Length: 138
Image (tube, rainbow, N blue to C red; front, side, top):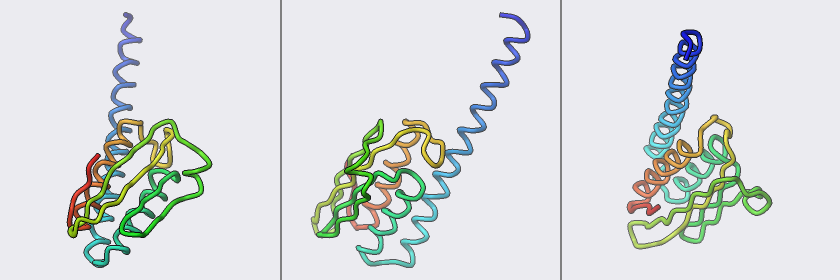
């Protein structure tokens, strides 16, 4: 390997690390925004709506959430299927059950890799489960 190739490789790795850090910061900002919203919106429906809108706007337009009779679904879920799927089961404080289903095709709005997107969805869905007084199972 020549010195030029080695230097180019180092620069490329450094740029990839910087971009990855920026993508992770965006996920952290989204999680923080969701938590802040939950502090002012205590109703179950409001919390589910906040999660749905945050994910739909920032992570994938292909999402469906169902919980306690509330069904939120974008047209894209039935029309398009992304390359990657996320499914989770929600359980509320009173035992009420629900689901989250989402599809993703990288790079998406935030430029996340498939693994980063899966991790972000696990984090946000976990926050939703806790906000409902229960949990989320992935």
